[in-house]
Length: 322
Image (cartoon, rainbow, N blue to C red; front, side, top):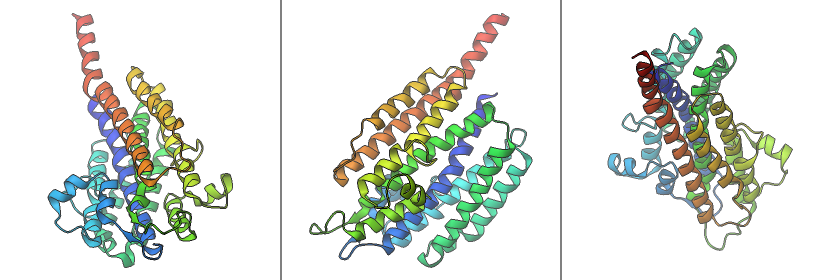
């Protein structure tokens, strides 16, 4: 497989997952706004920091209010992480991969692109936001189901899954961290029922509420929710599950020592995190540490397979032929 094709597949997985996970992050934010405790407020600047886009946002947008931030995250084409930009990039990648992907994949991704272009502007306002983004999530899941069921699980599929799970793990940490943007008065009891509503919203936006109640508890506590969304080995959107999938896919690829080593470092760090009775500030530091580990995994994958591996292979083959 050409390095360029492998890289396009990897980024196709990332772009599609980024669009869905951004929609989930925005829906989580909207749900938090509806469930804010009495006298609490929402720090919009903190949300942009949680999303990892604060530097770009400050260069592009002057006002840090709800409308400006929603526009930046959903429709702003100058933001490469916006939903519109992600779907457009996924469409362009899939157009160049028609020989590798199932034929229907291009049609579904193109249909998703047309839907986003038609409907994304209405998602900036709070009235229709959840409905539009829920439909986007459903359409993206239809694409994921098609690729999972109608594409050979070969090297091409492995690269796409690598991109998907690197992005998913990163965005899960950001959604878990969304409550860092809730500014609660000091007298507020941390496990007040109204605070539990915020964590229920986080679980629901990740489609994890029912599974949490089934496998953890009917009581929603912040430490239990964070532990579940980071460490559960069975739910597909947890960080632990994503890291395990990365290791599994990498083990099927050649020359995987560097990426697998970085993945196992992240797994050990995650396993060693003690999440009971930690402050929001410490929890935020944990999320930053996981995101840094995921960035290193991405760098190892990129340097091994997209930059150096195929060049070295061609050089070795040329030496043998010479």
